[in-house]
Length: 265
Image (tube, rainbow, N blue to C red):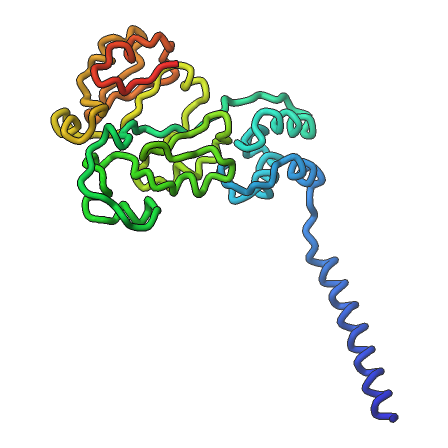
C-alpha cells in the first residue's frame, strides 16, 4: 500500500513540475499578436483561396497591417471588406478595380474541329497529355472537361457546349481557374473590360491553320487594329490583343471582325 501511495505522490509531483515548466516556456516563447491583425483577420471571409497572393487570410491580414498589401487585396471580400479594413486601420479606403476571370476561347463543339472522340477522365490536366494535346484540332482551344469549374469555390464556372463559361457576377477573382488551366486560356481582366470589347480566342497559329481548325478563331488579319481609333489593339503572335486601358468600347473592331471573335457589350 505504501508503494502505491509513494507512486501517486511521485506522479503528482512530476505533473506539477511539468505544468510549471510548460507555463514558463509558454510565457518565454509566446508571440505577441497585434490586435489590429486580429481585427483585420475577422473581416476577411476565410476562404484561404490564395487569390490575394498570400497563402491564406492570416498571411494577408498581417501583410495589410504591415502596409505590404492593399486594404482591398482580398478578391473575395472585395470593396466592402476593403472599406471595413480601412476603417480599422484608420486609412483612406482607396479601391482598385475588381478583376474577373475570362475564357479566351469560342471553339464550341459546333465551331471547333475534332480529331477524335475523347472517352477518358473528365480532367483537363489529364486530357492535355494525350497525343495532340486534346481532342480539338486547335491545340490552343478549351478542352471543356471542367478542371477550372472543379476548383471554383463560388460556382462561377460552367461548361457549355464544350467550352468553359464564366459567370462574371459570381466570379470573385481568386484566380484558381486561371492557375489550373493547362491551356492558359483564362485571364484575369478588369470587370470594366467586359463592358467594352473582348477577344474570344488565344490561338497563335497562322491564318490557314486557324481556319482549318475552327470556324471562329482569330487569323491575325489586323482588320480590328485598323478600325481602332484609340490604338488599343495590336497583333501579337498572329493574335489580336486589346489594351483595356486604351479601349473606349466603341465596338468598331467587333463590327468589322471577319471571324466574329470580338465580343462587345
